[in-house]
Amino acid sequence: MKVIGIDPGSHITGYGVVEKTGARLVCIASGAIETDTALPLESRLCAIFAGINEVISAHAPETAAIEAVFYAKNVKSAVALSHARGVALLASSLASLGVHEYSPRSVKLATVGYGNATKEQVRVMVSRILNMPEPRIQDAADALAVAVCHLNTWRPCAAMRGHAAGQR
Image (tube, rainbow, N blue to C red; front, side, top):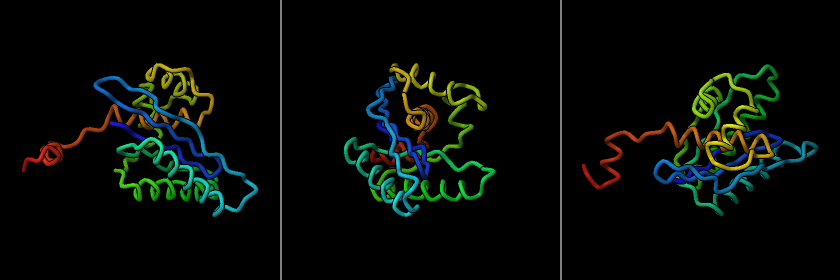
């Protein structure tokens, strides 16, 4: 199974494509879609949408895992983040990907084993889990962590497994 993990942001949106074969997880691609904060929000959202579409087209993931909204002290930042999440959800949905959302705490728990882990701890564990150098871009490390979280925690229900196998 191949998953695109997305860490949405109105300035920087991280992405990471991870493939699971058996018990092995491999990083296929990672990076960040960086927008110019001098541009109006709608222009930045267009750039995020185009960037996510490009990654999806290039790597053909089967599903998307997106970090859920957390409560922020700055309302303006929270609204801009919500817009970026909406664009990520839209791009994933238009590509017919199943979309799964994970809280930041769930992602940290699934990757580090501790829900209050620091960003640096997440970056280190992502590199160990994926057997790769530490990602230089924190937003890419966070996106890879979301993908890892999904691959290590999501289980289709028995009814879906039977349906997918052509059984009823």
